[in-house]
Amino acid sequence: MPLDFEHQIPHGLIWKPVMGHEPTNDLWLYGIDESTAQLMNKLTYPFEGNYTGIIFEDHPAMVTVRQLRNFGIKHLPAFGAMAFYTLQHIPHSFILSPIHRRERRGTVPQVTYSVSGNIITFTISPNEDIYECYRIELQQSYFIQEKIVYGIDGVAVVDIPTSFSGVIIALVTGYSEEISIASETWQALITIGPSPSPGKYLAMDAISGELLVDNETGELLLWKEDADE
View 1 (cartoon, rainbow, N blue to C red):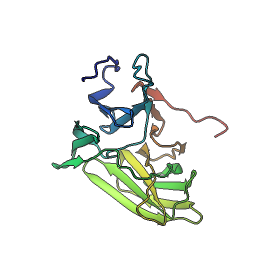
View 2 (cartoon, rainbow, N blue to C red):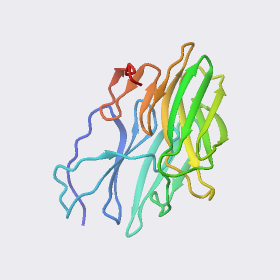
View 3 (cartoon, rainbow, N blue to C red):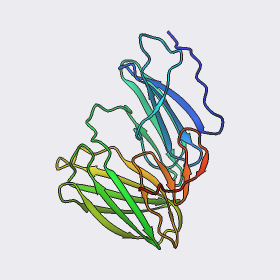
View 4 (cartoon, rainbow, N blue to C red):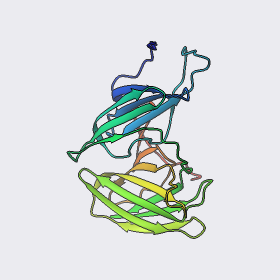
């Protein structure tokens, strides 16, 4: 039996929106964020078949943290949704089946950073789960810079020189001693410039130096750090 209901999405916020209803009754809203070209993942739980007034909440990346130019899903009965997508800067398409693999994901690590010239200093610490090492990725257009760092009791401090300039995507993923268990990915937008730009944000916050991108409205806001930060 088809499921028909209406949910309004602000114009210009999500490109190619699709919804997936999982066997566990999770209802997911996916779409490409027009400001970052990354996949947005929103989740809600309809109660006893009531879809009136449901509220979607942001969720960490489920499919990929890469920038996309195409995305879609296909449902299989009693199996859930499978995804197919094309990366923005690489002419390759991928299929992930199912999207929601029944595997354990760790909590997102806590990350603070500061920028001085072309050097980004990351301070990474565990949230609830302890990780042995962290994978740091810096992305800009077709290029990716990666570094693996090890922590003491899950804490790592590292300086990363980069040749990138302008706005880049920074990603941090933690890995436990059982390498098959990875954390949710922390991510932020960082501007590489001549002046230090401190920041302290958890996953899914979008920060570019002194510019804040509101994930809910897509609105660009001027960001000023609080005096007690």
